[in-house]
Image (cartoon, rainbow, N blue to C red; front, side):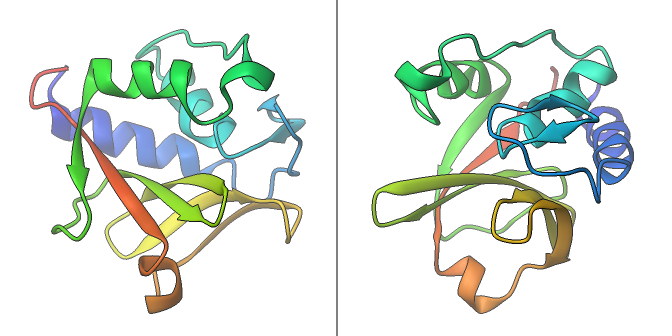
Length: 138
């Protein structure tokens, strides 16, 4: 699959999850967390079938990072962003993932209690730690 096709299909499906309730370890329409909003649309477009079985052990490290690095390369922030990039935010000891749409981010926001889309403003940009970008041929 070409990267452009993957990104467009991925973003289209991810947007259908806006409004889905936040649920820790959620992996379906009944609820998603920040890993869920990354992996569930990819699973739905049949890009891969990932289930984070060891969430308590790995959280946002280990297993999800291995999956991302299989299909993406890791960029250090700051760097120019592209549609479909997966952003890793870090604040103190917590980490969070979001999908970049080209101007906004889609993520499972536990403070709001649902999957949301909003502008990637300076506050959010200041929390970016890493960027994961799909390889050209995935």
